[in-house]
Length: 387
Image (spheres, rainbow, N blue to C red):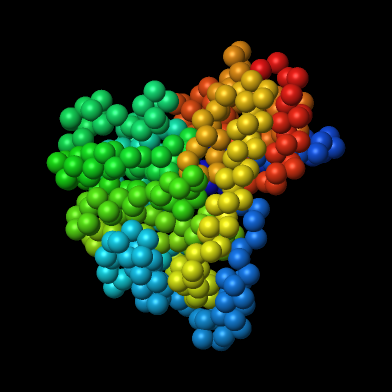
């Protein structure tokens, strides 16, 4: 058999694929696993969205190829949502493109902008797709460390000017996966100013913008770049409406960036299923009561987990957004070693911070996408461990 392309060798094992293997081994031993590893909401998709999907699936008009860029009705719903949520004007005609989940758009964006050896500015710890797809596109990732002492925000003043001059784009992600951190207005203003000065594309992964607590409201990068000269934003309905399996999202912002991504996609996929787009329209144009209900559920879980961890000696910040808890591993352990210990000894699955980049070493991530009783049980299982 022919050898695979050398680029395949550059791909590290996908983080959650390794975790799945460990989980399978534990289950074979009969362990009752409490799984906090993946950000996959256990809350069902709201019934009104499911009903609209059922209606759309039954309509033969939706059984044919969809449009590459997404139905105009869907792109219009996205634009209207931006206007209502962020007071930002987006032209649905050429400033919005439908995605098969935001991961798909994020993964393809480097291929639309990077030539061999071009630089991309990548946060670490961060969503693994940013770095991996930069490498596959032939680019060079320049790592921006997200350090606790900086509130898990990159320090732009530490990036060498020669790197900034060569950069084609920068990924930022707030509210942040995996740290749960949020960004303030000054950060966004500085990011836009930097993109303007060095003429690169600012890519904001805003998948968690609606998963917020205690009255906090996340911002869109387009609020700070209203003319959309430098910014593109990636969104997903997965977290906001508990639709992870539906695979629907969108990118919006700079016309050229949106069109370049769309042009690439025409040669890769055939668009998102129209029935899913109709369901997404229903979600985006609803009264958003389901989003408020989702926030209430996760905020209560956040409090139970943070207070429970504190009771056993693990102090963690109380995040204002995302459904992730980012915690230090106990002294004497690496991230991976502690995660393995939890699986093997307590049947608890967490994600080692090192899986999100070298700068994630020393931490582990808990996803509170499981019920309150299981969160309490996990804390009790951990009680008495040497931490």
